[in-house]
Length: 206
Ligand SMILES: Cc1cc2nc3c(=O)[nH]c(=O)nc-3n(C[C@H](O)[C@H](O)[C@H](O)COP(=O)(O)O)c2cc1C
Figure (cartoon, protein in one colour):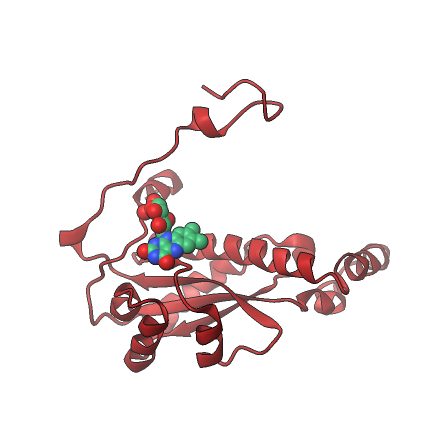
């Protein structure tokens, strides 16, 4: 499957074949690609918690307003991000030349220290890009997925014991779509509505 076919075949799946297991090696394959996602200053704010245990998935379903896919999927991934991840910049830039390091480390600290709103925005941006990588990488090895924000973030955070610095970005459920419930592609705004050239009021891309 080439990339365009893969992207065209991906759906937010809500009905899964129950009882399937996803192996550590499939997860490893997926996450080896996820960690290649881009992030601002390469800070890699992301953190992922994978839940496969049935009782825990049932508890998460309760915190996700009863959405059945949380229980029926093979795994629930809580995509999170660390607000203080910028603090690791010295480690992340340890193997670059000194000139680059001297340039970027103060810039990163200056941008994020005490900037709680920007810290949160970056967590959401990086985490969302990682979540998209997760869904495409999963699809590439035969797993369907569904992104979700319909859950009690505080409740899920407490259940999964997030530390105070780490916040949920979204859930992504992974499983195999129940083929009898295959969904058609939902409505898309056309390219000509969402893309303009050179400015907001420019010509639409036809
Ligand atoms: C951030 C985000 C949160 C979402 N939350 C939910 C959710 O809680 N439950 C759900 O069934 N679908 C959820 N969706 C899936 C969207 O409804 C879906 O992506 C959209 O309808 C387009 O369908 P498609 O992904 O199959 O093309 C979410 C998608 C995103 C990106």
